[in-house]
Length: 106
Image 1 (cartoon, one colour):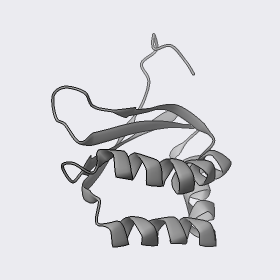
Image 2 (cartoon, rainbow, N blue to C red; image 1 turned 90 degrees about the horizontal axis):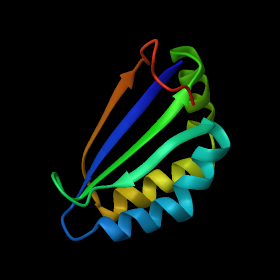
Image 3 (cartoon, one colour; image 1 turned 180 degrees about the horizontal axis):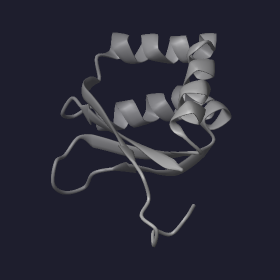
């Protein structure tokens, strides 16, 4: 199992707009294609204007296959277009995590 932890920095003052856009357009598609979301969060202290979400995959190959299928969906391309046009994102990062032997399994 691996976890893809994705961190997005949103333009200050635009977090609510990004969350709304994602909830309406991105969330349904990612649930359809990516499978298990372990959490989807916004920051309230520390580095503000940040969204963090984590997705569970059986392997890197599983992740690549799922994301490739989603990338072919015209609705995903539309979500990407809407996000780009709105100019809401400043930065995107992702990190792949592997659980320890004592980590609770999802």
